[in-house]
Length: 162
Image (cartoon, rainbow, N blue to C red; front, top):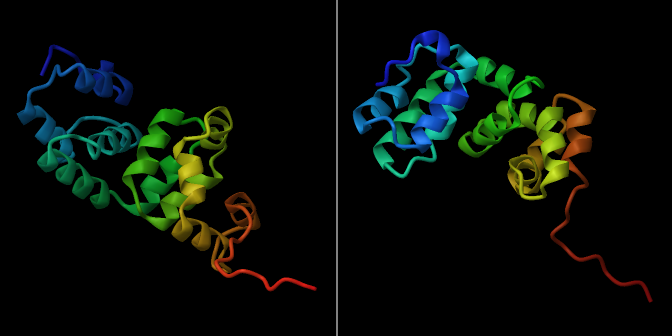
């Protein structure tokens, strides 16, 4: 690793350094296994980024590490409106956990991002049939979640009236 002190480490700087190929693969494996002195929110963002890695071993290790973090912590990060929308988008692509996806749908920071670009993870989440159905279900946590999920789509055609 470089001569960076822990006080200078953040999810944004680590992700930028990974993109610039500044870390050797052994360091990436260590990071993907969750061994990184970062606050929980930054660690979640870095692990979500690493799940999209071209190296299958690193991506699998990052997915395992992300699953090892308690769901309530990941959902709290997903619900944090002060979080960086790009980090929320990374998490949306990395997780299939329903409570986390619901928190992402309700997060206004990601919804704002969706208004600017139509291909954001928020719109991907909303278009996903399983996520939309779960958000509209009676078990959904709030009416705002069901409202943001959009109208129910029907697969069958209605008969024509003559």
